[in-house]
Amino acid sequence: MKILVDADACPVKEIIVSCGREFEVPVIMFIDTSHFYDDGTSLVVQVDTASDSVDIAMANRVERGDICVTQDYGLAALLLGKGARVINQNGFIYTNENIERLLFERHISREMRKAGKRGGKIKKRGKENDERFEICLRKLLGEMSLR
Image 1: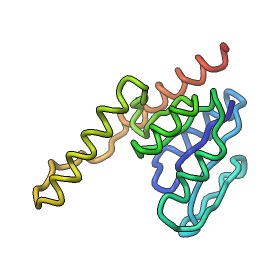
Image 2 (image 1 turned 60 degrees about the vertical axis):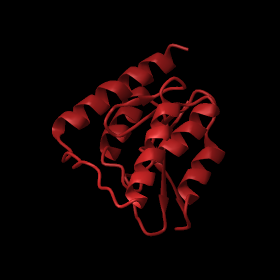
Image 3 (image 1 turned 30 degrees about the vertical axis):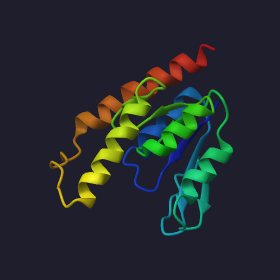
Image 4 (image 1 turned 180 degrees about the vertical axis):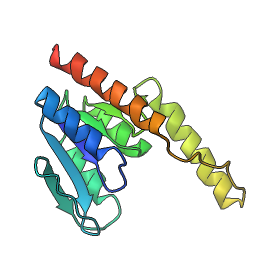
């Protein structure tokens, strides 16, 4: 088991690294060449800036039983299909039961934006998001380590 992270815009990298150390699970951060990351312990995989390069790199490295962190619904669906557990930066756990609805909502939102309609305001990230993420990541790590 390992933790794979779509790390370009991930606000919880430090939490992931800390939990990875605690549970003795390797962490792989995927970033494109417009970013830099080095925490001294994670493996960093740097890819080109082409669209979906990070997604493709993660999909090629994931194995059944890995834990993946991404906020991208499309990537989450792909990773679920490969047998990974997938969580977003706010602690929401993607499942086979909820991913189709999320992809459909994303499609509807995109169509509305094309038609000139604007969505609601996105709440500013708060400490409670980090706390919820850490609780959910620890839960996943605990469940996976029991297997």
